[in-house]
Structures are given as C-alpha cells and as structure tokens.
Image (cartoon, rainbow, N blue to C red; front, side, top):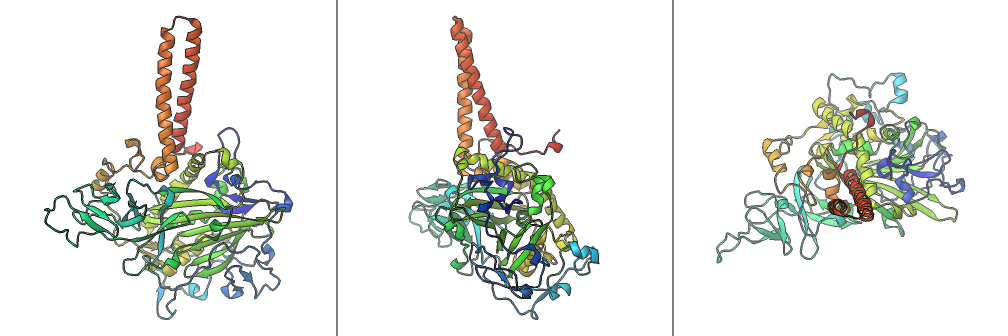
Length: 603
C-alpha cells in the first residue's frame, strides 16, 4: 500500500490490497480508497505540495545536508531555496537508542567470491544503482547500534479478533506464546508450554476464565499461577514451580502488543502511537494475514511501490503495467530506530507521499490534503509485520482516513478482505522463492540485489538499517552483513510436526473441516481463521447453502409429485431460485477460501 497521486495531483492510495472488485468481476474495478474519499477530486482540492523535484540532486545525499524537525523535516544547507515540507509527520519521531562509539565496535562486511557492486560502481551503473551513503560504508565498515530484539513491543493480534472463549497460539521469532482473555476480559499472555509435560496450552480450553491444559487438566490464571491439578491429593499443596512464564501485553489503539523481554521491565514509551488513528472522525478497516516468508521479505515488499503496476496489474484501477515508471525518493531521517522520507513519481512536481519505518517492524505511508472548505484530511496505510519465525510472518494491515465514501457502506468488509488476500497471493510465489535464495546463498543482499535508485531506495535503507541492529536479532539478512539462525526451524518440517499439524486440535477456531488444516498456502488459513468477521461470514454462507440446497431438493420432489401443472411450474421455479442461491453461497465461500491463480499459470 502506498499513498500516491495522479498526474493532476489528485490524491489516491496506490495499494491494490483493498481493491473492491477484481478485473473480472462485473466488468469494472473500484479501489478501496474510494471508501474513504472520492478518487477523482477536482484540481482545487489538490494537497499542498512538498518540495519540487528540481531540488533533489541525489537519493542518497549526505545527512549533513539535512536538518530534522521532529514533526516537519526541512532541508537547509545546500538547498537554501527549498521550502519546508508542508505535511506534519503523523507519528512521534523515532527514538534513537544510545550507540556504541564507532571505534569500539565495527562490523566488517562479509567477504565472498560474489560480485560486490556497492563499493566500486562503474560510472554508468552509479547513475542508476543505490550506492554507499557514508564514508564508513565505502570503507566496508558498519557502526553497530545497541539493540536487543526482546526489548521491543511486537504486534500480536487485532484486539477485536481475540476470541473470548478459546486460547490463541502465536509466535514471535519462533518463541511460542498463548494469548487469551480471562474471566474479567483481561488479556493474558503465557509461554505456550505446560510446566507439567510441555503440552501446548494453546490447544487447551478456557474454564471459568482459567486456561486449562488439554493433557492432564492443569489450570492456570492471572500471572501464570497454577490453581488446579486434578491428580494431586486433596491435602497436598500445588508446587510453587508449577507456574508458567508470562509476558506483558497491552491493547493500544485496537492492537495487542507483547513485550518479549524476561529480564528488562516493559518500556511502555516504546509502544507505537499513531497520531492519525487518534484524530476525530478517522475510520479504518483492518485485516490480518499469515504469510509463508520472512518478515524482512514482507517489509521489503510493502515498502516497494515500483512493483505494484507490474505484479498487481489491473487488480484495481490504480495498477496498470503501462504506468510503471521511475520514482524519486528523499531520505529525511536515519536513526538507530529506523528511517523516514518522501517519495513520488519522477514526473510529479513534488513528493506527495511520506513513508516511515520504525523498529522493530512498523511501516506506514501517509498522505494529507485540504478540501475546498479548508478542512484538512488525513490518510494512512499502516503495516505491522510480526516476525513469527523462520520463513514466516504475520501482517496486520490498517487502512483508514478522516474522509469516508458512501461506497464503504455498500460493500461488506469481507469483500475487501478477500481482495486483500488476492493481492498477497499475487506476490506469494516469488517472495517465498526469494526467501529460499537468501537462505541458500548465505551472503548479504548487496551481493545478490541490484537496487535501483529509482525504485529500491527504501529496500536498501531497510537492509542497511539491519546492518546496524541485526546483531541483536536471532538472525538477519542485511545489506552488508548476515547472521544465520543458530538452529533451523525443524518443528514444522519434521514428521512429528506434520502429524501434530493434522491433529484434531490443530485446525484453528472456525475451521470447517480438514481442507482448512494449517497450510499457509490456503487463503482460509492465512486470513479467515484470524478474522472473526470473515469466519462468521463463511459459517453463515455454509448454513445458507445447506439450507437452500435442502429446500431446493424438497421443492423439486414436490414438483414431481404435484398433479396440477400450475403447481409444478411454481415449485420448479422456486427450486431453481434456491439452486441459484446455493450457487451464490458457494461462490462467496470460494472467494474466502480459494487462492487466486494468475491467468498465464492456469491449466
């Protein structure tokens, strides 16, 4: 999802994630942003323009040329005539953690036999490829920042989708957690492991607000205290060691966040706060997607606007392959906590879109404009990318604005959700294969990628950020450095793991049969089981389909038995209508459970 504008500077959100209709449905296409504002605003509603592109001499200008204001970045030295950027940043500024002195800890680039385009680019290549951004990078050195992945808040789930009557198994960097609501409705998070014999607590059930292990019936509550062991003699006390490890969780702006450190008290100031979502009248639509590739691959994809016209061609009215073109980027902030900047099309007179990445896994695109009545409107595409483990991730997408179109009331939310699933399916194949190549090659991305200045600036910035902090992660693939996982993730691939994934307790809440057993290639498992609304929709359509089929069969039988011709006609017409309803219900179910397949790949 990327905020963009057309050639007349009319604002729209260039993101096929929320297109309302596929190119083949009903012969026309609507873009989900139309649910928040009219896509064809007149020219007098054009937003105020950020700096002209004529002032942007390089996408990797030295940071000494830029001075940053916490809410409004401006360029000063070297560009005295450059106007202030008119759009205030919609979130708090990134907070830098203390960095070690450059002389005390430097991480040298991995040396291999692969080509290395960055340090010594040919003159012609240097014009189009992303090059070094500092003297340290030119010398092959990296100043490493203090970073500990456990001392961060990670987005676990949408608060409204957390079930009230069952525990939820989740992971962060392969650390298994269980999330549930106790009898008072409070969120609790434990290590997903019973202290008795290591059974997964997420396969258990809630009884009177307590979490019960399905194996022997041990029950836990509150801060992980065991309150019941059925096999314990009546006069015996429950051992103090019979408790589970707990994790701090908080519900902030509709998202459940977890603090992963067991050693450091939670730093609540680190919980991300999104200013636009707190504005009066701001409305959003949120979806959750589980994806079969690393969270760094996911973030790359989300901060890559150049791929949209090609990969998502005709998925919505903003994505057309003939519109693929060079883009311009202006990095305005680099810290130990992330980076930020403006971007737009090369032919634009300004850079209308603002992107911000903030550690550990938060990405947002923002846009604002003033309407004819002088009212300022705000639009945000927010992506919360949880690193669930090796080769897998979970994404929470939140898209919203302060202006909403009546179209949002016409089409149901589940229709938008299935179109979002379609977009991720369009990218899934090559993103998964990209993940495999990174694992097999075991070299930094600069030796594998050809990052263009006119399309891949954010990707390069992200991988360079990982160079600084990757040492504090379980594993990482940076621009110039890598650290591989200490242990491969074998649980999901071992025979025992496969058996466990097909067990009776494995299909997630809302599953309607073995066809929905855990499989990240399945749309139902990737999204529907994590979405309370879509889950209920599938159940409702299943019930309607079965009821209409039974009614149609009964009407057909009555038509055969009826003696009067008039009744035969009435009964057969009614039965036909019921069979039509069965078809509609089956189509709706398929839209929520069947993957998109590209036309040229269909047999």
